[in-house]
Length: 96
Image (tube, rainbow, N blue to C red):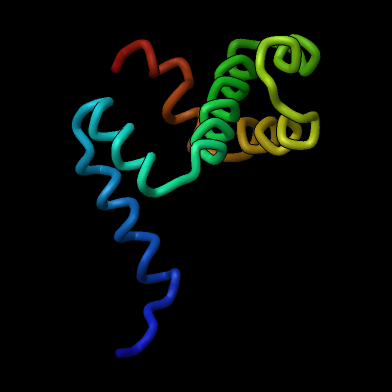
């Protein structure tokens, strides 16, 4: 059997995630897929992104979320130049 590349596997991961319908489904899936620490890290990044989008300063985010300044800097860069966080957490979020 030939090894499959990440280019093939990553879209399958996203398709699987799109099939999750409830918080319970998500919790069970991510508990199997990731370590508890990985899930915590993702939750912290999401919370930090939300606060940055709301206009909070780095200091306010660090006071609210247990996140390193290096990780916060990366999240901030993604909020400013990426599309994922702002698509999910931006102003249109209230319309969902």
